[in-house]
Image (cartoon, rainbow, N blue to C red):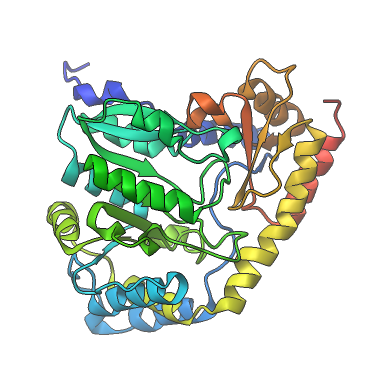
Length: 390
């Protein structure tokens, strides 16, 4: 054995829960257990036909395979600006106010690097997306959790926030429509976030990939007047366009913020394949309301109905008004914590669902079901669970 040791930051984080748990699921499948996964939010439907066709067409062009600009090609930036105007009514300068990303998860890294020094504080929701916490830790920022609760519709408690010492806070992560809770975006919350950012000189970053899922009226933080001055919005093609593996996202803000993020990004990657960029631009400009209604409303509505029956069978309670591609529900009092229930579901019913503790302390008594599985798989999961005593 050598005497090489890893960097100290390795000890600050654990392997991502799904990375670790999927190894266990793979072993169970190798034993013939046939586990049905209702855990991960990876859309299983295809992108639009014209999106796929555009990728194939460009891939055949001999000139398409070289390095591309880190800032993204003009066609993609213009399509992203068109998307924000069409769906949110937000005017964006494609040359200065948009930065295409290799998925919005990459944007979390770049934004943290651009704005937070080691030791600076970062406001992270509890419950919330684990990457906000893990990347902040890796980069030396101090995590300061703020509470989300069912009683407040999973919106920020501004009275609690105003009572804190915010002098060292540089960033605040928000995520509406919310993952994992399904709390919907509210324009009043957005107005208060913009006001909060301005008064405390904090950069508020809203992660907005779920606005089309089970949601007829998508909105954006940037609809609030003056939001660009202090706020950044991340968006993604993974969820609403069925393109999770394509890794195309965007961040939108004022020209100064975008230039700082690009400065970081340009030192990390060398751009995205031209075919992917042009295909993404095709999806952004040609996927119409009917396409979104079919793939983001009708399909997920059918699956949500099945997921609700699963939760009812497990004795879990949920808010029927929640949106997004998951169903979030509170476990019965008889369980010590969510993992006690999810482990039983995995090993007895052979269905993989997510315990809420991975999203923070306020998720300890919740479980989450993903709607990203074919209808027949979800019906089979319901059948397996209903066959047992809960």
